[in-house]
Amino acid sequence: MTSAPHSPARTSERPLRIIALANQKGGVGKTTTAINLGTALAAIGERVLVLDLDPQGNASTGLGIDRRQRRVSTYHVMTGEAPLADAVVATSVPRLLVAPSTMDLLGLELELASAPDRSHRLRGILADIGGDGTSTEGVSYVLIDCPPSLNLLTINALAAADAVLVPLQCEFFALEGLSQLLRTVEQVRSALNPRLSIQGIVLTMFDPRNNLSAQVVADVRGFMGEKVYETMIPRNVRVSEAPSHGKPVLLYDLKCAGAQAYLRLASEVIQREGRVPAAA
Image (cartoon, rainbow, N blue to C red; front, side):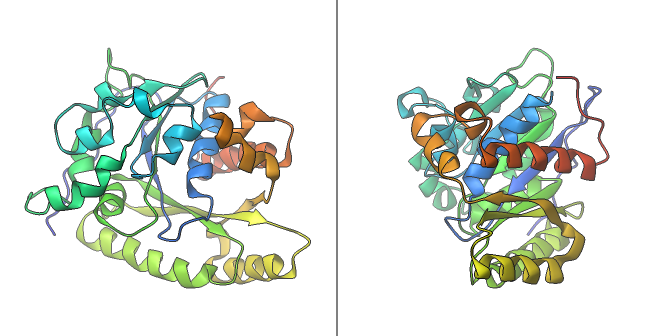
């Protein structure tokens, strides 16, 4: 693999941070976390872009972007057919933007197979993000929702990111999947992106009534220590219902336990980076 280009330039007073949300296992709350962490960061004053790199497009749907609205998608951006600014659309959440995806992304790996920049194409795309006069002006966080596999799309996200955030379901095989992802992160750090770090691991779908959940929490904290966020996302029916209404749970039911957990998680993310919260 060839080495990556330089980090994106940034001139605004809010330095750009690019965080990939990744886990090769499906059903761990990755997309839900991308949607609701993005909303929570926007609620405390950050300008956030959710970049949907999952061909299923669930992050786009969960933010209320109908499939008929996705005339320009991350597929067109990744193939070079359109600039990122053309794909970005506003959501119903102030300061929260999304670059939606479509099923066309399924064929991207084959299309880019012979491209010399295939592993770090996204890095180049994000190099000029946040420029004045564009749809991404003033963006301070990019959250990349990766597909549930360690394919070329995920490699691109990790090669472009400053850090990776790992949603981890409180279930039996959690640590097994985590080990595989950590190996991939280390490979990307060695070959493509030496600045890549683990921003943190967020435990999702936690059920305090379930002994297995408590054991998984203890095991993951024992294995990863301070990399695991204090905030855990509870198993919560309002969190599950919100995407069917095209809303983040913070808009659907701000007072529910899941929404409050995502607000706490956003605060932890900012604290870990030593950033002063933006003025909302």
